[in-house]
Figure 1 (tube, rainbow, N blue to C red):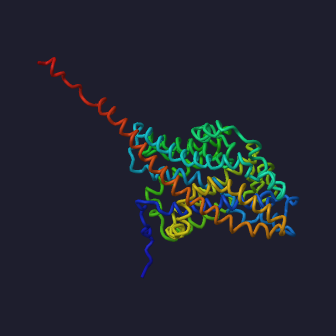
Figure 2: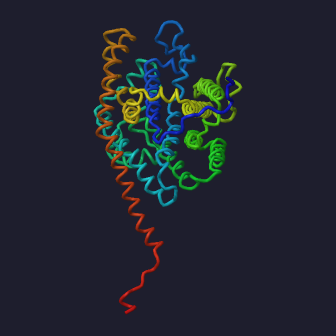
Figure 3: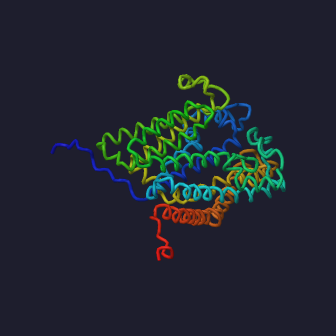
Length: 424
């Protein structure tokens, strides 16, 4: 029988994007692995032989190997994913300026409550000198670890940062990984504002592209905001059923192409201090842009391409829906907020104690199992007692703001009522 050339039926977009939990879990594990490898084996990040601990050139090889590509996604994947998740979570919400205040309140509380709780947990450790990042930097050669927590801020700084300092001003004196939260907040404002303004316009994808180009050219703005726009655009394409436009062979070829392109972009050398030396990447270096911004651009594009491949492939979506990844994904925010504090306190302290009795690698290995147990149990408790309640509180406050604005709208639109006393 002749083979039909008509596009093969592709599954339409589900009502709930459950596979996003698995992607969050993947991204969280990548960030944690990146920080631990860079803290205890810094050459795996920098490629500098002076800080190598393994014999031979294994660490330097790893820094430039395809294996290290997975670590280069880092937080860029979170930002692209955030743009898609925000669009999906508000898909059934009213797309108007009147709905925007309630959505912003809900988002601020959703981010702010877990951030404040993480700061409250971190401050006693800092005050009690139980963060050993400086000693760890001296022992491992990871100088970047030693630059954090140079002094103990006053208690007033805790209240300031917990209320608005982290989200609105990007303060990171109490937890260095919280630098992403200011990007997350303003990226959320960008996405929600666009959805309120042009969320149903046919030409919205052109606006997203124009804004992405403007951010790229305006170097004072973080390129990470382009990630939010890419995630927003991907959700639009996904909802339009773009996968159904391709035949099965075309779809498979496109998926492979997207994955290979994502692999190439994220394999760009991650040094933030110099241009790449390899001939494979020298042509990709953008003069005048800076090594750090150039790397962020390629990692963000690579993250968007990977997410596009997942959206296009039902098989990849099934892989991301594995129970373990979905469970990790639901706790991804908790893991992210806590992992660097656990690294600098329990992990560093245990490693330094073991280092006095065992070899470097044995100390690292013996430290890992307790670290996994402590990090997972603390993230589980944080998820149950802080993260989940923050969802509930954010929804309640969002509804309260929406209800508060609704009567004002009805009063504005209602026809003037006749004063019965006067008419009589």
